[in-house]
Image: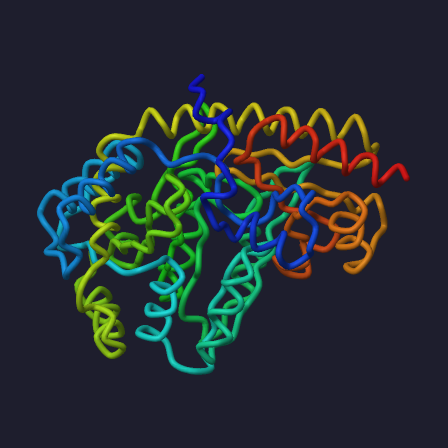
Length: 390
């Protein structure tokens, strides 16, 4: 295992939303932060080298997107998702949620419905509502810490105004890497009801050992023509501050509608000069780094499960197949929202994402970020156990 994941970042040299922003908000310099979806680890050396190379060239003007950018994406998807894509299917942007906004604006009308599977990141609801669209919730079904899709509920929730299925693959926060069979069932329902699939696959490379990622658009020509998939290096390689993303869509009409939405906001002119270089470096040279990362995250998951389930009877640490999150069931404590927040932030002095932020079905749960040094994780779990017992 590389020493990279044991190395502490000097807080005097960085300004992170995950740590410094929370410390400033609370005034508590002894906080341990497991909230924001960033890693505590340095980015991979090829990525840092690529940034230095661009900066050292001395020109930060509008960059031209070279064929190597598209080649890096194509080869990466071929390795990861066993999916053959083409350069003309790819369009760039500054982030996955801005892309989602543009897709919704381009392909639906105010009052149309966007369906997604809860619990899920609060931006799914916020982006939908802020666009004047109606969120429809299709809750996942939990069985012994393992979450599954509820297809019958999905079918029953569809109305003539349901226009987009907003998929999260792998799923944040429950950590499912959806199987081919699950995605085929979901895709069949969408095709039958003329529902476009918008798939947020930003965590697709963060797979636990032995797990695989399947892009829903890769399953058939019909699904490929009915899907826009959103990607970025941001979560997989810890480059959220670079602001570079892209979508993949085989259907030229859907892709042109998306690009038109960007042009209307003048968002298609110019690219991120560092983001282009980071994308190439990440997809071309960092596969081994990601594998080592997920080996470490997997061990962190095992550590969390043992500590919390042994230390707090009745707490269930959810299974995980992908992402660096773990979804933990604290409902045995019987606490409401305010009491949950007080327990973690005030008593345990740890920052987590409390479950109600991911929808009402998240009440009593917590999302914990495992992309941290193990000694920090262990101290955080010990604080939580002590706070509950006291």
